[in-house]
Image (cartoon, rainbow, N blue to C red; front, side, top):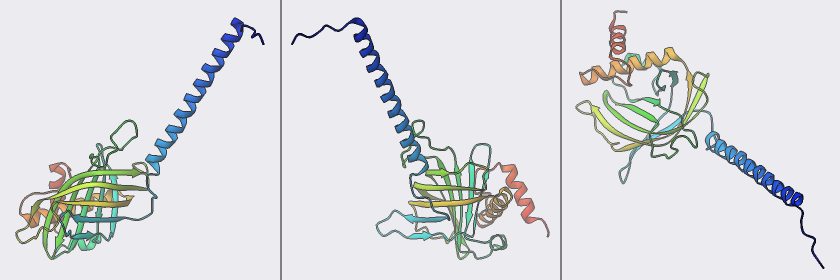
Amino acid sequence: MKKTPRTNFEIKFTSTLRNSFGNVFALAITVIMAGVLQGCYSFQWPWSAGTSLVTAGLATNPIKLPFEPKQCVYTVEPAQTTFFLSDFTPEELAAGGDLTGQVINIQLLWEPRPGYTPLDPTTTNISIRLLVFSKGEVGMYGGGGFAWPRGTPGESNMELRMTGSNLSLIAKTKDFVDLLSPGEMLGSVDATFNEQAAIVMRRTASQLISNKLGVVRWVDSMPLTDFHVAVADETAPR
């Protein structure tokens, strides 16, 4: 059977149809991938309410330090979002004495964004300060890690999912026994936005660690002038 040659119109129409289909297909793939990436970012894990953190050493038989939160607050600062957590009540922390427990400061430095920032758990987007009190002795640990945030800074609640970190001892009292270095902190944080409570915890913990070590130390990167104000407030006669 003899084939009829295609006209220029038919050739152009077929070419246009193919190009249109290709453009639609590419757009569909882009939309799907954007949804997948957004899903990976927002729903990487099944989020659950509450704070659940465990700090553990990386030795062969590591010690594990569970955390039972009594305070979980956060505040928004110019360069980061800052979380303060403690398993002391405000009254227990203010009283000082022979404390046994933890105070944790986590600073969210930047939020991971698929396609724009690293997403590897070995990268660093949080800084960590951990104070471990043990019968009046204290060790101060520092390090960094990676966390996925949930929520917008300034909202009533904000969460973190910590998937990687490293901690090492940076200061201690004479009789504090370090059983964690090197260590890591993993788990989830669920904090309430409360600027005043965050300031009080930072000031109180900074005063405690400075008194214990005999040198000026502060829990996070607040300016030294702020620390002097904190010391003045905490040492003023009641």
